[in-house]
Image (cartoon, rainbow, N blue to C red; front, side):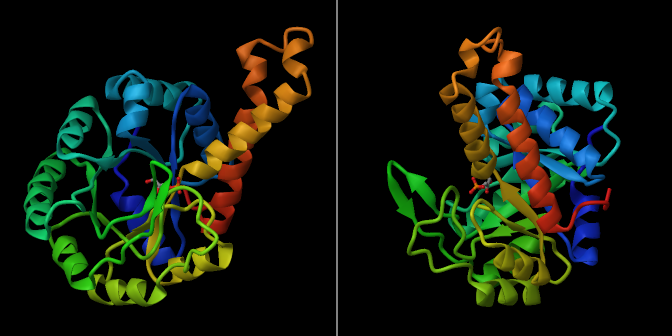
Amino acid sequence: MLVSAAEMLKKAKAGHYAVGQFNINNLEWTKAVLLTAQENNSPVILGVSEGAGKYMAGYKTVVGMVNGMLEELKITVPVALHLDHGSYDACYKCIEAGFSSIMFDGSHYPIEENIEKTKELVKVCAEKGISLEAEVGSIGGEEDGVIGMGECADPKECKAIADLGIDFLAAGIGNIHGKYPENWAGLSFETLDAIQQLTGEMPLVLHGGTGIPTDMIKKAIDLGVSKINVNTECQLSFAAATRKYVEEGKDQQGKGYDPRKLLAPGFEAIKETVKEKMEIFGSVGKA
Ligand code: 13P
């Protein structure tokens, strides 16, 4: 059964480790992440962006697929199904569809409006036992070939949002989605420290987990990060393994064109990446 992410992240914050949110794109992705979590006895969060939800034929399809897998694959570790960077409307759709956790990304609204909408969702989520992530300060990334640098969140605004009764908070600390550019300045630990001082027990979320050096990840966990989002890195390992299979001509040997064979190396590559991340985050054995 899907669970809210509130409890697992409270435990992670108290135990000084982080739980990975791995974004899913299709059946192979979902199965790879769930099996790796089970094999490593780790709690896990499945992230679904609005785009991925649409790609997978809608949120209800995703809920059906994930619930089916939990049962058929006998997954017993805690699993949350989480909307990633949800708009106000998408949050309601996912609550309705049966997600166990949502992120309302109101970071592009003026802070007053972000607070107002987050407050409303706190109430709705609490009634349903769904966990809620909010965001302050934008997280950069590539858009139309231009890489926007992440802007650092204002710790006081973080405190204002944290106090609304959300379960965990994403705060921009110079992190960005996708690959980091050569001239990236690194995470702002000064900002993270200031945020954690004001928000106390609140589990903090680090987006853009792909490509952040291990020492920075560990330092971020020391400073209160309890959830780390990873998306691009699984896509890169899936693509590399699939490319290798095709370049070696394996799809043209025997029944190598069978999707169950063609997608197998990519599937294994996702499992390997997820396992590596769980080890670095310290969530192995914490289910
Ligand atoms: P990456 O794609 O950089 O790993 O970021 C994932 C993320 O933060 C999803 O919200």
